[in-house]
Amino acid sequence: MINIEQLSEYGTVLPDEPMRYHTSMRVGGKVKYFITPNDLDSLIELISLLKDNKEPFMVLGRGSNVIFPDYDMELTIICIYNTLDYIEIEDNFVRVGAGFSMQKLAKKVSKLGLSGLEYAGGIPGTIAGAVYMNAGAHKGETKDIVEYVKTIDLDGIIHEYSNKDCLFSYRHSVFQEKDEIIIEAGLVLEHKDASEVFKRMSGNLSYRKELQPLELPSCGSVFKNPENNHAGLMIEQAGLKGYKIGGAEVSTKHANFIVNVNEAKSCDIIELQAYVQKTIKEQFGVELVSEIKIIKGIDARK
Image (cartoon, rainbow, N blue to C red; front, side, top):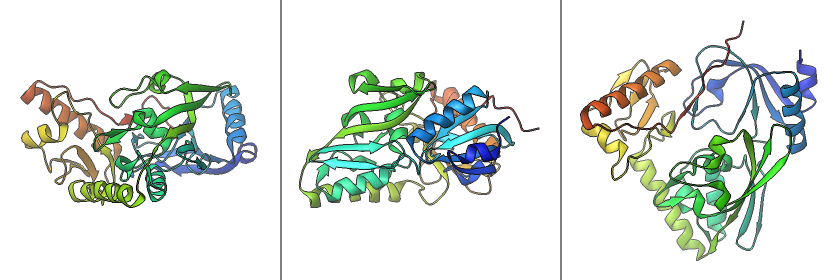
């Protein structure tokens, strides 16, 4: 059995840590350990240790698109948000660690007159999450700027994928089918007037602030847009704006957001998501596909 002293060799360890402190929806019970590795080598060694001891674990960025169960879990979280958060910029090429904030990245490159990330000004999460989901907004997507992605597998072997290898499509990448951890991305941007780039990014962010409930805990957009339609519009047409289950609510500001308005539980959010899907299926014959990762099958702490 692994103890906290062993784990502390690889980074900062928080035992019995509530996941509501580490997810954008502010829900989730306690995990056994919450670890921030010292560096990439520590990450690789930590994964090997947990794997060899058959300890269940999960790698997490900023927790912006994930729902953990309400109960206390027999699970170790490895958080890379403050570990793989480096950035190197040479001309129009950006090498960035998986834990680097998308919002921070977009702001930084825009001030340098590098275009391609204007869409990302208000996107929560890390570059790893953006690559994993092929995040996008305002007619821009992560796939448009990626040159390569590096991952490590559970044996500590590093793999490199070209843009083509990533098999990007709408809110999808090959990494959703692989048991690998994104550790770095190489991005190619375009030189443009810095004031114009920053203006476009700021405009996109203002648009999001006006139309989306950024002031409340949420996971961002809940559902993928169906072909030739918008999930938020369908949910609004179904009369579900403001519909609540427990402390979770379909946002009155943007119907494709579920927000935590009153100490919601994970079960409230999951039940509300399912109710929205059922209603849209009944009224429009359309099956809404969730963008949120719901963590299941984790043993409860004894």
